[in-house]
Image (cartoon, rainbow, N blue to C red; front, top):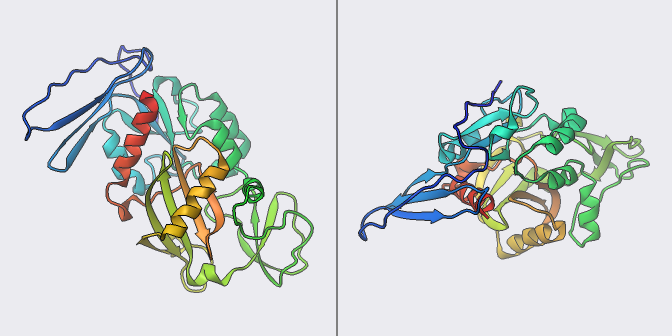
Length: 311
């Protein structure tokens, strides 16, 4: 399990003074961001397209017991954050969260198994966290889809109680992730408390899901996930195929409308569509970003995080 590291004499959040000198036109370009008392200072240096991040802040990347070193997809993110960032297991009682300047939620892929414990933990974190606790709590139960639908976002028709009314349907828990508990269902099956039902959409099998990733409201990249033959789950763990995607103007505009309708503080978000831009999920807790399909995307997230901490 991850443990909090030894810290320097600086109190958490205290400004570490830095200095940089402008060089000649062909020298490395240095960009500095200042900070008010109680903030931190960061700088980025680049030369001929190469980039080194000098983050100068202690960042915990929250993860789970099953992935104490993070999901491999986050390796470039961890490297870009530098030596003062490290994974930390959210449920580890020995982690001193106050030793960090910020917490970035990543592969906490067991939160839905210990939902109440997880919500209690996000409320206890004593330093800035992204996404914030209020956003995470709202997004942790799929009932948020009702709110977005009421705001005009096209979503898959969903039944929250009663019984399944479609001949071919999907049943899934309202608190879950990674297709946990998802199964096919038939007309007449009861919808138990804590479950939801949706009609089975053939598009999910043929075209899969289109996922659009945003960092601080700005579009970063998109990928398409298609389930393996004979399956309905699009995750790579179940054999799903992932490819880079270029969204159309209509798809991008639809995703932006989802973020506007959510009206939440979102350092990061992944909008998952099926069919004709119907929202299946707004992932705002611990989405996989598929960095390996989007060169430079991890740096965009680092930049967005830095801007938040220094604001």
